[in-house]
Length: 165
Image (cartoon, rainbow, N blue to C red; front, side, top):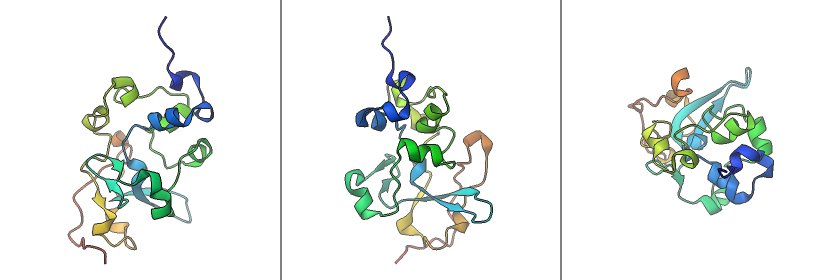
């Protein structure tokens, strides 16, 4: 009999810390700056990533102490995931919460952490670090909406990009 996969038999709240971390697909989309329209609640992604994100590896360069270094960094928990309407539809946490299977490119399915990049789902080399832009003016970096890529269409950076002082 095939071994049951924890993500198929456990709810997000039942997962161990190790299972929770393993469920992350490594796309790094949650590390993008987002802008929320205060009137409509609509959230727009930008192509600007947290300064701690290694954009090629799609991993936080300071994961264990990120909350001390970036006070508004969000820790995803089952409760937070259920409230975060901005998580992409490809997000494994969101998919499990919605009763959907993991995508073929998810590392737990494919056996490789590279498939999320090969499938074009991750931010690998598609974003710009916040250290190179004025984070007080992110509107020029809003990503165009494209339902095929779940709103993550990274175009070239604006020519007005300057390194933030």
